[in-house]
Each structure stands twice: as C-alpha cells, then as structure tokens.
Amino acid sequence: MEFDDGLYDQVLSEAQWCALSKTTEENGRTLEPLSPEDIPERLADVLARQSGLEHAA
Image (cartoon, rainbow, N blue to C red):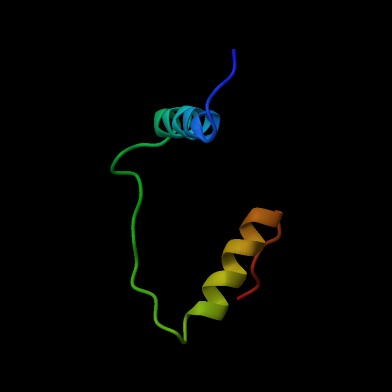
C-alpha cells in the first residue's frame, strides 16, 4: 500500500500520539514557572535524570 506524500508521516505521528497518550495520565503532568535564572539548573537536572546520573546539590 502506498501513501500520498505526507500521509505516511501523519499516520505515523497519530499512531505515536495514541500510543503515548495511553501511557501517560491526563492530569499527571505539572507545569512550573521557569525564570531565566533557573534554566541552567533545571536543564542540568533533566539531563542528569535522563542519563541516569544524580544531581549533587
């Protein structure tokens, strides 16, 4: 089966969105304000968590 240009990407994106939405809770996300001064520390924390390292406070 062949898809028109862009249709395959749209189908794949929608399939990924559906899969991800089933693995997360609707109200399980929180947003916190981010000031420019907080960016370096918050970014370092996220990168450390994703890489499996712990942030030394």
